[in-house]
Amino acid sequence: MDVNTTLVTAAVKSQVDPLRKRLAASERQLAAAEGQIRELKSSASQAADALVLRVWRDSCPPLQELWAEANSGVRVFMGVTLGGAGLGTAKGRVTKIAVSRQGLTGVVPAAFGQLGMLEELHLGSNRLTGAVPAELGQLTALIALRLDGN
Image (tube, rainbow, N blue to C red; front, side, top):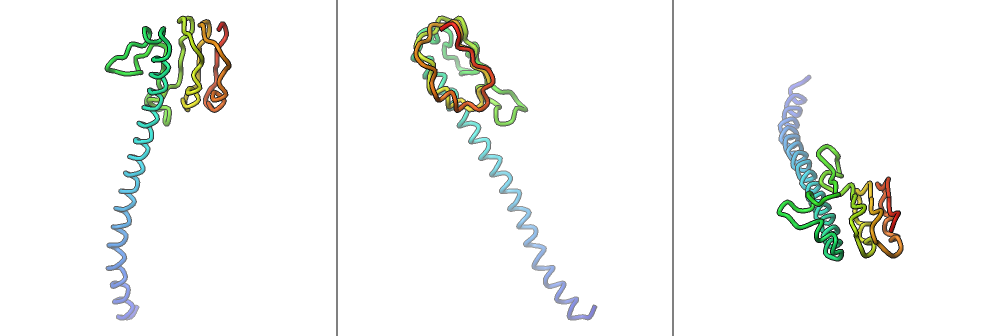
């Protein structure tokens, strides 16, 4: 290698190395921002699930007794199961509602269609009326639906 080639190589390397470091730092910042976005989306989904349950509770007197609001929120509502750690996108989301034989009245809320991680819905043997909401068809995770005895 001649002297000119060595000088050019050294000059290019002196310009490329800082760019590589900046690129690596930007990639770390991007990964951190993506993690924060996932957390924000998860928190928003959890809050939306909680709102669906609270609105239903407020419209159904038997649920008002069954689900008295506590400081700990919907995670202590009897018959409601939330996704746990290690369950990916279901973490903290409503995955099961099992409130059969509770004397529930009214209709099955169309808003249940917003519970995107709901896998099981057990509302049998209550006094629910009306048609099954078409919105339940949006529940792609739903594997069990019990509405018998209403």
